[in-house]
Each structure stands twice: as structure tokens, then as C-alpha cells.
Length: 127
Image (cartoon, rainbow, N blue to C red; front, side, top):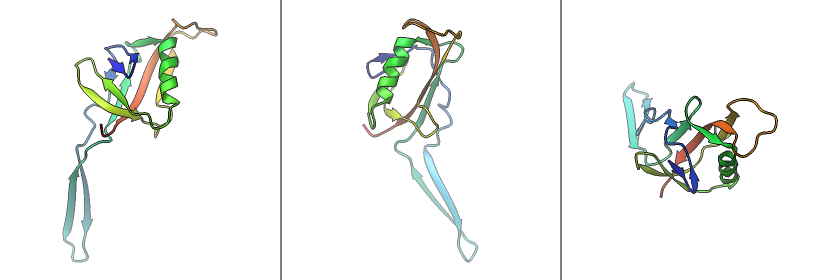
């Protein structure tokens, strides 16, 4: 799995893969009581949350690389999954940090090889 030039573990889980609704719908009642329904297919904006809490750990060096990407506003990146699907994405900052990392075992002074669990929050955008 790859996000731009950063290699990620292939066993990161796409935890919200099937929560995407490809059609947006709005309903409204008229003054006569009739129901108006409007539907439109969504093109982009799919949330991709990748997590590896228990299985897919990354090094501190990988976290630093991801944090450097996260610091760039408006950066469009290519995400390539282990099954060769690819998406044009940006970081999803709407729920807080787009890159979250926790040490697997707490340690005061970790080096670049120390292991972390990782959560990435991304949004698909137009290519």
C-alpha cells in the first residue's frame, strides 16, 4: 500500500469502506402534502479511514513522513491499495487529526524504528 511516496503496511484496514452512500437524497413536503424527492449521484468526497490498531504497525520514521505530507495544505495525493485500486485523495481534517499515531508500547525516547499504530483519514477528490 502506498500514499504518495510513503509505503504503508498492506494489512491496514479500510474500516469505513462500505459506509459510503454513492447517491445523495433530499426529501421535502410541499404545502399540499406531496413528497418531493431529489437524488443525485456523488462523484467525490468518499471518506477513506485506514487503521491498523492491532495488526498494521509503522515506524516512527513513517509517521514523520506522513506528518510532513499532512502539513501541506491542499495537497492532492495518490493512494494505492494493496489490491491495486487507486484514488486521488486529500487529508480529511474534519474529524481532527488526519494522521493519528500511538506508540505500541509507551517509551519516553523512541528512535526512528520504534513502532506505532496508525490511523489515516482521507477524502477522495477529482483526479
